[in-house]
Structure formats: C-alpha cells, structure tokens
Length: 482
Image (cartoon, rainbow, N blue to C red; front, side, top):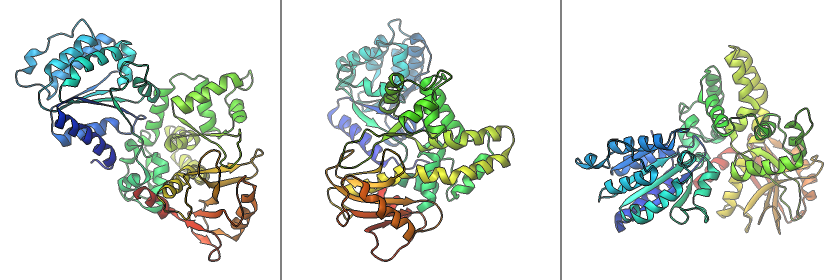
C-alpha cells in the first residue's frame, strides 16, 4: 500500500517527462531523514512508470572495490539491459573504480527513457572521496546525453546538501528535493483517524512511514500505544533507536546534548550546558555553541525557537525536531526498558503518567505551523501575517503560546496573540483572563487592535465574541488540505 507523497511523485514525474520529451538526462538529489520513505517513494515511481531501471543501495563500511562490485551486480540484475546487454558487462569489477564503472553504466544505458537510482549516496562518498568528481565527469561527458533520470538519495542531510553546493563537482547538475515525514493530513489518511486522534497519531509516529504504516486504520491512539508497548520489537521503539545509533554511534558531547534536550527537557542554553556536563562541570560555551549550531543547521535534529515580537531578543529554546524521537527520549525509552524486563504493567503506567503533559507541549509546533499555513493562504482574519511563533520573557514566568506577525523573529506588526489548551476540559474565562493579562507584555501587541486566538482540544466555555478566532482539532487537520 502506498499512501500520500502525491506532490513528490508529481515532481519526479515532471522530471521524467522532460527526459522523455528532450531525450536528455536529468538528475535529482533527494535528501531526508531515515525512515521518511525515500527508497519507497522512488521504488513507487519506478513501478508506476514501467520503464527500465536500476536500483543500487550502497553498503555502509564497504570498500570502494566492494561497492563497485555490488553496483555491477545490481546493474546485471536490472531491467536496464537489453537481452544482449549483459554480454557488454565485465565479469569482474573494473580496476579503475567508480570512474570506470560509471563509464560502463553509460555504455549500457538504453536509447529509451530509463531510471538509475543510487541510494545512500553519502556512503559511496565515504568509501571513495573522488566519487563526486567521477560522477561529474561521467555525467557531463556521457550520461547526461542519454534519456535517463538519475536519482541520488541520502539520509545524511548535511552531506547531501553539500553534494550540490557551488564548490562541489556536481554543482548545478541536480535538482534538489527534501523529503520530510508525512504531513498531518497524510498521517490521518494512513491511520484512518480524524481530529484530535489524528493529531495524537502524528505526534506518536512523527509522520514517519515506518511507524505510521504499522497502525491498523481506525485504531484509537491509546489502543495503539497499549498494543505496541507489549511488543519489545515495535517500530515505536526500534525506529528512533536506530536513528540515534546511526547518527550518534558514540556517547560523545553531541549525544549528551541531544539527551539533555529530549530526555531531561532542558531547552535553554544554560540548562543544556548543565544537563550535558560531567563531573568537570557544565559544557563550556565554546564547546556548546558550535555543537548546537551543528545539531540545528547540519544534522537538523534540533529546532530552535525564538520569541516573536517587534523587539530583538537573545533568548532561545531548543527542542527535538522529530516528535517521535522527542517522545522516545522523553517517555518511550524508559517505557521500553521496563518492557524488556517484562514489566509491561509498569510500562503502561509510566506511559499514562507522562503522556498527557508531554503531548500538551509537543503539539505546539504543529498548531503554529497550521496557523501559519492558514494565514499564508488568507484563511485567517489578519492580512500580511506569515509567521506564527510564541513569546516568553527572560524569567520564563510569562509564556504566550501563539504570536502572529509579518516576519520572524523580529516583526514590524503583531497581528494576534493566543493560547493553546490541550488538556482535558474547555478553555474558559479563567484561561481568557490570563491571556488578556499577559498578551500586552509582548512588544508590539496592541490591545484592541491585535487579535486574540484560542486553540483548544476540548472546546471553549466563553461568551460569544470574547476572542477573534477559536480553533479545534478538526481545524488543525484540515489546514494541510488547503
């Protein structure tokens, strides 16, 4: 079963249409975190277009000679070759490595449109640092003149991004595609859920197909969690474990920073430094700053939130970008340890204890994204509102969940402020009084001009017209269908 990815399939199909129309090669570099479905997407394309193709997946740690041999085997088994084409292939891998192998590939490409897939490209580059240059030469002189769509896949986001940058050999030769997890609407379709249950499912799975496709359609989130907790090898546990092991195999400072943000809930610079420190004390600023930058900008495993207002601020809060990994570090890892010790009842009790609080915080980025999408589509009462964030003061004793502005993190105008209530019970007058009291503290918020927004899981208990916009779970899910 293949669900979603309609936009991505359309983009790849358009690239292939260009190949068919012009007879010239096109190349696309596709990057995305592990388990987001890159290989599955490309395999679906190959199956749908019914053209000759070769799908090669690199083996991590293999030598360059071994890698070339594996590729030769994949080429021999592929549908690229004509009945007599196998006779053109050498019986042994070429001694010239990837340079010779790519020339062999060019020589057996058919005259009809075809697809060639190189999966886990960063692993090939690790094996042979000259691979990028060999690919560039082969592409320019031989391959691009054939009607072939070359798809280059990789899970190392930074390395894949670097692969096509201006100072690298393949610069300007490949279109770039970033494949993210399922969006909320796609998760809803896969799980057969709607409203608040769909949002819970998205928080639990992180939109990762490897977990979402394990969900029996229509199963309530509480039932799914209860069922999976009893399974020691559930994807709910193994997918984030494998992600951590592949990205952070050694227990170094970067791993401790990630553990601090996700496991202990440390979100500010000073708290992270203390939580990630050791007997020698907190992590020094000179060490922590570049590591946080690497985890945010290169690894993209952390996200950073900054207060949104009309005044600059040096405040920042960090969070795990993927909600499934965030759930694993905060809750599921401890749950899994209990399950491995056959203490399933205790595992379920721990999950019940932590779930509601974790969910209330984890849902905030989804709601902000939904409001920003709706604002950009002109579906909110405020025009020129493109960014939605939050705001907090230096003491963190006043926090506003939702702030809408024309740009971020320093806006020229604040369109609205709002509150999220994702616990049981409606948003009532008490919550509204607190919002009205704290919203004017946001630099740029103008009472009577700036609006008030309420997003509640369980509805509201407010007089008519008390706020400018009220959203519930269905509004959030429907945003991704705009």
